[in-house]
Image (cartoon, rainbow, N blue to C red; front, side, top):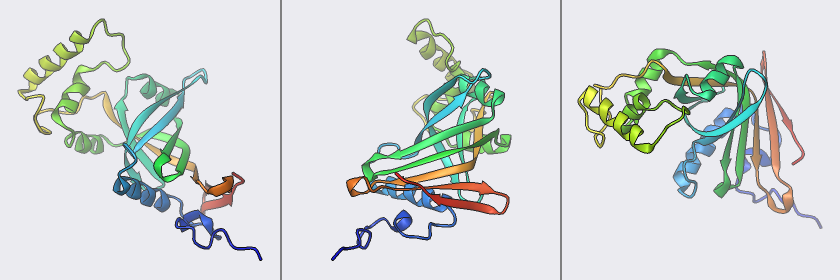
Length: 220
């Protein structure tokens, strides 16, 4: 007599039909669980893939600072004059991948990208540790650097400029650089994947339509 392999499976998000109508609450809960679990370093780290004006792709790790289930979006921050910033201006689409390896979960998101409002960037910048605030002023992200001392000197110069100590807390004395701020990736498509024994993994995709999300289970 056969048994149901899903009967005692602890992760019920994807193991039963119908699939959840809204995928982003699942992502928000997975992210909360990953932080609480403690085994996953930097659960909000994602691989961000962009392409330049010629369509040449590049990828790097960034930190997602907020997940917005109500809008189906994630927000991350960068120098606007960095390669990724310029690529997002030239081709305002991107993909990110969360990989919660310790929990056997993965999330892929792709969609359109736009800068967030300056006030939103200001509010987040004000919460950053002061050394990160100063680093945003001192770094010419991805530009050639002759030696490390030049960066350290630039940070010291900026700290003196704003009258702060690099080992202090966030400081209202340090304003946000005008070329630094947030991007919002609003998903057109999101895929959730959950590891299962015997490679019978759960995998499903949601596509944004005018009337809402359309879900589709996929073979792993």
